[in-house]
Length: 298
Image 1 (cartoon, rainbow, N blue to C red):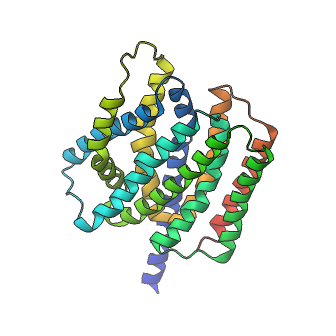
Image 2: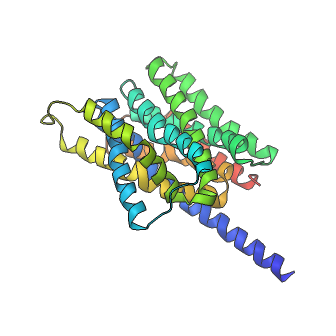
């Protein structure tokens, strides 16, 4: 009886830590789209994508060498490649391309689809089985986001919206695959090895796409590049993958519904972009869906 009680206590502590780590990751990721929006105004989107990954990969390699981490097993290489394709290449590149057509405030709303995508891939790749009511709240939150986009007529830019949808799918797969792998490899090790695997291609591409001069690049653009390289590409994933592994991919993944709230705040305060009442209503509604999804996630 005592063993069962201790096990339940440790399980609850692990779930609580998972939600805390997940929340920290979401807060860090919330600055990604506004920072990317600032950067793509002056950097080529492809150059931005490969450069941020190159800088993060160099730091990740230093950390792996410093802590003398063992190389991943052969069976872990394919999942690491999937992580790299999803969150190192796919999401950053697709969002950078999308932000040429839409504002960060508009694109942030699409992030509300990430929890559903992550939960679906968590079932397919992670073997999780949330309760049926969980899917009700998850789908409801996603429908609110899609409904808002549809209410805008999707006339701002069909290209931008399609690119954002593809980015969400790539990111959801990368999140779920990375979370599954982090249970055995470790949270920061997963993103670090994924970055290192992508480093040769990214470094060569960064050199190839490098502009002739950086004289026209402003200080805010450089700061934005630094943020997406250090925080969005590496530090955020340390907390995020740890949170997903501790609290469950589908459950903790619902915290991404909070990301539009933080992101819209940044878009309004830092970029001075217009945040409509509709955006705020959708944001509040999806936040309420987090509570319901959390309650029925197991």
